Length: 137
Image (cartoon, rainbow, N blue to C red; front, side, top):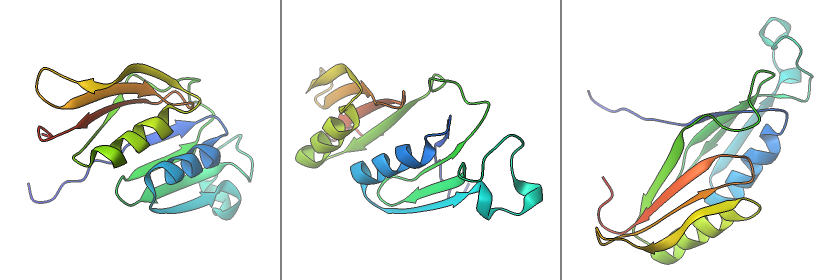
């Protein structure tokens, strides 16, 4: 395998734009959004409104993609996004931002493997794990 990229793709129930703007405020980067109204008629999802998001893409230090979906659940499926880094102050800021309006499941704290680790669920129901230190693989 040469170069492989894994990018989470989230499905939201009508609040995709709000969620992706939130993630842009947390991670930075460039956010591109295309609404159903901008898509050709044959490409629009059945039952969608013109303001629903057909595709959103956040590119930067963290890459995320998302859309609105009539079939999305109220809570994210059981997938957790793991973030690793070595700049503690920056990583703590990201963790705190993701936690606003959500629920910290495990506060950031020093772990037996030597790194700082914590878990939170953001206000959109997405579960995040964070590891700060040198054991990032």
